[in-house]
Image (cartoon, rainbow, N blue to C red; front, side, top):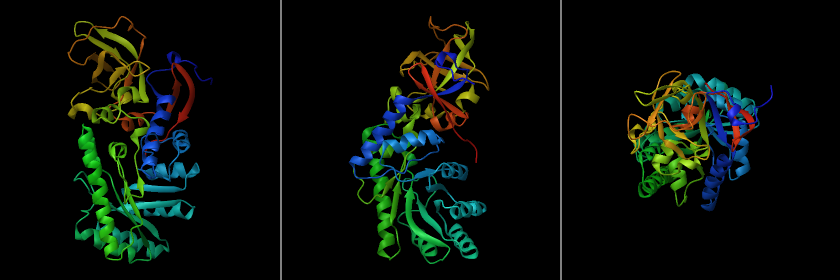
Length: 382
């Protein structure tokens, strides 16, 4: 089947990836971290595509990858990537899968954040004659999982890992998820310092009691783009920076024109009395993510944009059903229908959360302006 050459010929809804914005986003973070003397371990959970990953590698300054599922680990290992960090606290039922990858030659690292799991992993490794490389997850900002960098449990877990033949103590890692709630350069810098300083503190505490900690891994897109000094840090992880999205624009680390990902939808009807424009891009096409609802500007299910990233008459996807998107004006319930929008017209919708929107699709249509230049497959699931 021949690839359509123009965006206007694509079936809708579909997922567009702007090649020029993608490359610019990759270059920006690579150069920023490189200028600080750091190295990137990019997170692939946003794009889940070896073709995108090749662009990231071309951008330079990368050492291995970060994954959020073992299916991602399988896929990227099959495509030649061997240095992989599985950055979700390990569940014991997944250890056989991890073992299989390691025995096949994958340099796979796992994380954990409690004593019980540390004992289970160590015991499994000893019984099966395998040594798992382990990082301890830290909670540096009271966001989610992880151990207190200043608590006793950190030392206890590290001692279990280091004292077993089934595990090897590799280091510590954290994710500054609270950075997603920032919206000023000052607050972003503050939380990036908090993430760095508390991670370095944890590493120093381990070294003080003669426990190994060669890796100190930090990361989120907002803090990676905001950090100004990486002293004591060995690697930085980030993922959504490749595509960006409306949440990242609300945080303040990108502009709408930088968002590389969009959903192409078609106008299928109007509710003139309500001031609604109806499209075929509902929440199945955009995802249920409403990440901007807690930010200064709530874009509903997405912002309608031109191909160069400019808002169209302040139109947002205010409501969404499974296969229907309802467009109206950002500041009013009603909207004045743009003269260019008729039945069959296309609109591009910038997503709230690139990861969740991309996960609705099996491929990207890669575009340069209004031309389609490639189709790139992606994976989904676990």
